[in-house]
Image (cartoon, rainbow, N blue to C red; front, top):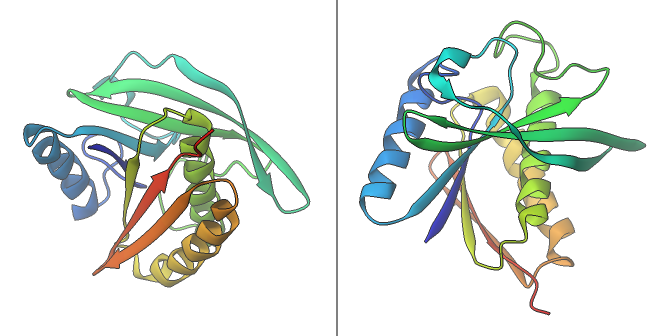
Length: 183
């Protein structure tokens, strides 16, 4: 199975609390069990870049509908202690992840709503021709309810572009089963 973990944190590159450890450990365990696992993270300016092996741009023109316009993003790829990671870097005057910190900004819900939308757009843009299960661990209480609602709305929006989008909520986690269009 192809699994994508969408998370604001992962040990050791972007660690604030236990969520980062869970994402890293879970990805390892899923791979041990024969799954192909990728992790999507925001490209923070304050990440531990010394733990990322190589970081070339992998996807240059990801355009995210946002507000009355679009935000151009670059997606970079690198390995973090053997984990396959994609880093979404928005090029926006809002400087979503260029603030020298992970959390604690007044607009955190907006920043992570943007990241959630960008992650889904990136999954669609990959067009890999196989099913993917996206897993979004939600630990930040102030963001959880808003992001769950956002993902439910996005799932409906994306439904017209996919065969089927399933949203599964479990405890503080959100699973999204994305099936590509059949041509």
